[in-house]
Image (cartoon, rainbow, N blue to C red; front, side, top):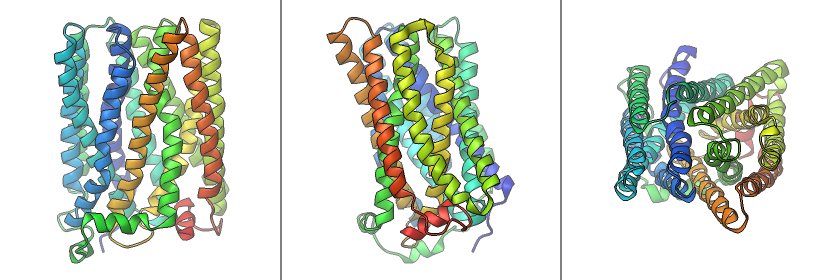
Length: 439
């Protein structure tokens, strides 16, 4: 059995997560805003491209099974980051081409967004499985916090830098900035995982397990806790996803912000997420042996507070520039961060619960649930904006409608969380262990 990762190893994996977030925030938020505001294209177009990138991530269970069979995660992490960095640059190039020629730019963007989806699916799934397998149970909750704090930090830093460096906007500036971010993300990731896992298989038992992917998937789906957690992930991420697609276009259309201004707003949102995650870590540290109950409260409360924050954004759409938009977005980020890190802490424990040597498939299942939710949420959100705008003059009501629907879905996620996180003993070493006992 390989030794567990210490804090330095956990931080190194967090660097990979930060690099992953730095590339995806540009493709999902900034490129989306450029298509809608600068090029005046229908919001459904970037929504479809982002949905494509999430649809590709339906391969997560299969990618996870591949790393299970090989016994090592590092090649899948590095290969995924190569695909992600390449895809992000190609997507930026395609978006810049759309201003002059829509069809060629769209075709290039399809290739780029597809590679981004493949890269996120491969690197993200194997990274989480490696951490779940090599982090001691007592460190899983703080490790989840570190992992996602660093991811959000990468997103926030990239978005804030974009806010400063993309004004005045030009297609060449967009492609150049994306190229720098993509290259930096790839270099950081390779250095972070270099010799971290070792050369021997992490889970040699997998080589003795001859079950194919279909059999492995059926075995995981037969686990009640895995199914319940997948359902919660889908609903909560469905609520979360649409706001990510519409926030920057909303700020540009209703509040007349520049590309740099809306990118900065995304950075502020993710700074709020960072604060929410840090707050959960602090609460769990204070809770001591009752940290499981604290994590459950943070998950349910974070979903409920997110519903309130989205209701505030609906009010902002109707009130216009007089509304304290930046404050609302920051508070929404705090609520999102609280529920996200609590759920991830549970996921890390559940990854090893159930049948042995199925960690990759299990995490892949939840990743696929998230991907489907993001694809559906992005398409539904952008499509609803276009449909409502056609029926009602002005974008304000369209955005208010989308934010209102998201608030209702987040309220449903809060109700589901009450049933998913049912620990038997609040005195165990963390939320992941308690939840895994219920399965």
